[in-house]
Image 1 (cartoon, one colour):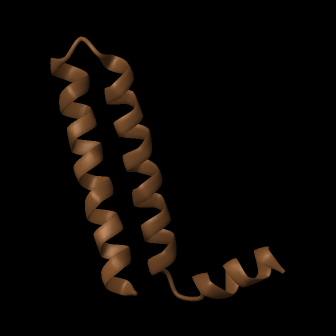
Image 2 (cartoon, rainbow, N blue to C red):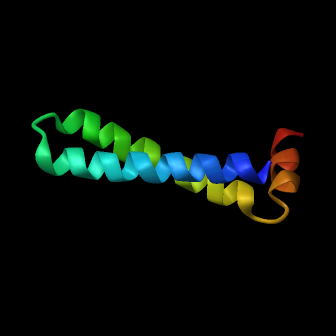
Image 3 (cartoon, one colour):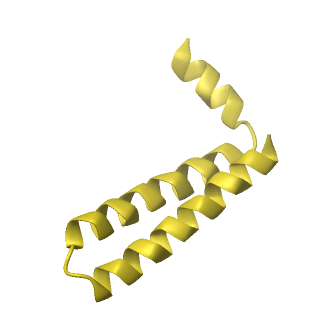
Length: 63
């Protein structure tokens, strides 16, 4: 499972970098903003899932 969390982290970093490059270079700021936000959400989610006891927190939120 840790492999998939690191994969999500890597995808988030790539989207964040791609969004920031597109933000500077392109005229289409909207797609760059979407990439930045989605990249930050993926990074935050993967870092949360990599922390100890995150499964307990999720279990308590569901029940």
